[in-house]
Image (cartoon, rainbow, N blue to C red; front, side, top):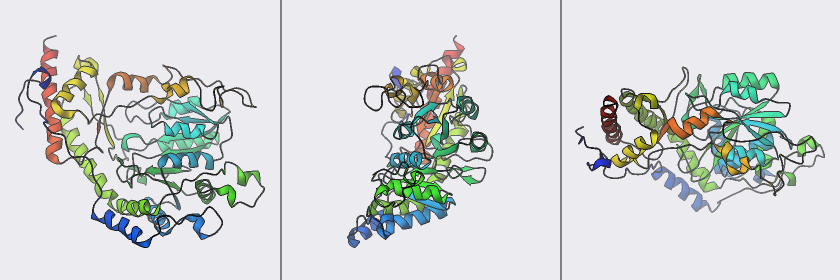
Length: 431
């Protein structure tokens, strides 16, 4: 496409002159599903007591069956948010106060605070510079006698290295929980992402590939863990007769129940998953074909045997080759109309909650005051150098789930990059 050469930040005309329409995967099918529930008069059928109602209504149970079939797992437990799902998963694996769970710094903070919910302690391990997922070598280096689990996040749309993580987990007798919020439909060596862990699962939040507003799906092949997830979801302490500590541990009075309208919508979204993923992959392919020709851009890396569903199109900038810093590049691209598409990522180990080790009250619990001795885990700059360098200097991501992205819109994004890079090339040659 023909584009004026003068940068918009220097007074030229922007490549993109109007905002792209927001992503909208809802259609007539979801409207009919919601109306079906409304006409039934049953918005929730959960009861916090023994009996069939303990497991939810017909839409919730149908969603669980259909998701189990779609992802090839024995059991699915639907919850009212993926944050609830993470809390339930950490409780179901039997965390004790003072236990440590190794987790990535590149995730939504709920992945780590779900660990704190059970008075256990997050331990952050650095990320792989190519996939941005947790680095198995860093995980193994972080294992101590307190470690009980690994929380692996399938960031941006592709699976973490579960084969390597499973080998570590088996060697040290650890559980694995995967947070596949951003990667439903991705494959890892022919296996659906999120299904190789002891417990995995997906977000149904409004800006994910498939959604019902808020919700989550927990997946497992372990019947015992599935039963515990169901108990934690729905006031399980009200229905347990046993006095066994193993049966009662972490079964607290939560209400993580998904409503019938949300479940009905999620069922329709689940049916659309393959098509929605394919549209993201097509957009990413067009971007990679064009941007890989520009010097100083490293497109997303996808390991052999895996697929990527591109919740975020994550790139790395080679600043030595570009001779311009990321802030200048972001400003130039924003002026060309790419603003609003950028995806940054926080290093949550530098969140004040962790830096100051303040969670419950003001005395530093659970890091301080444990019967087994105070925790030595601390959080500070330099803990995860790969993640910190990427966040501060070299990572550049595009929110592919923010818009539907027609081919023409992707071509405009490409044209904006090419225009800025034409200027960068002139700047490099003048040095």
